[in-house]
Image 1 (cartoon, one colour):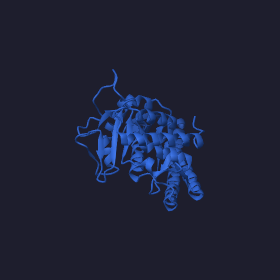
Image 2 (cartoon, rainbow, N blue to C red; image 1 turned 180 degrees about the vertical axis):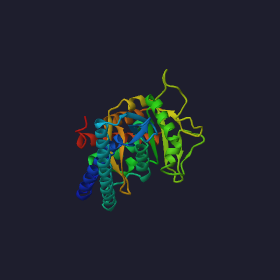
Image 3 (cartoon, one colour; image 1 turned 90 degrees about the vertical axis):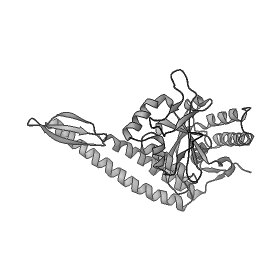
Length: 313
């Protein structure tokens, strides 16, 4: 049996078109974020000052009213209006492309996975997590324009590797948003609940699991470690050799759900995936059922990298 099937020409063209729009939308949103908030004129002791306001409620003065500050104000308004108009236009086009994705059966990633990835981006916390394990295969097959055999993708859980090296920034961000990681996950599916026996795992009403893992702790890396100060939040579980995954070259590409919706997956270089899976398969305490899948996935990704992802360096 061939390890993958070619994506049909029509579906492949559609993915390429949709990916271009998706990536243009990402760039537009980044530029729009630079002008998030606003500028206002405020009178203080009979003098007008230009005030920069931000979405987090902070403000700072840019100086008294003058030709220079008036020009700063005009340019800001022009940039903001232009950026917002471009985001709106691209969002409409992306909605169209995502409907075409569904009509042409372009995607097959689980909708819940794409929803989780989009939630991480929307809350600006995606930089703190890497998708590892079986679900990384959706990124590799998307980049290669193929569909891997179903047996390689059979799993009902996604592993999110939390980068504890950035934990202070993460905690600060979550406090600013007044939410926990479990609360953020419930924005995607309100039925997610923590497993009482495994507080690093959340399970929804359909049995889909989200595991939060972390590298093995060191002298400057406390353990046990909860993701936020919320008493009902995830505790991250240590994973052997996870530091290898954290230091691996990143691999990032848009993936498509069965619904046609898209999200950016951030994972590890496929060569690191192959090496790590083979290491896992050789562990004496590894579940025999998982050993055969580890070896199958390693072989498939190794061949896929050689044949279709050789441009990855």
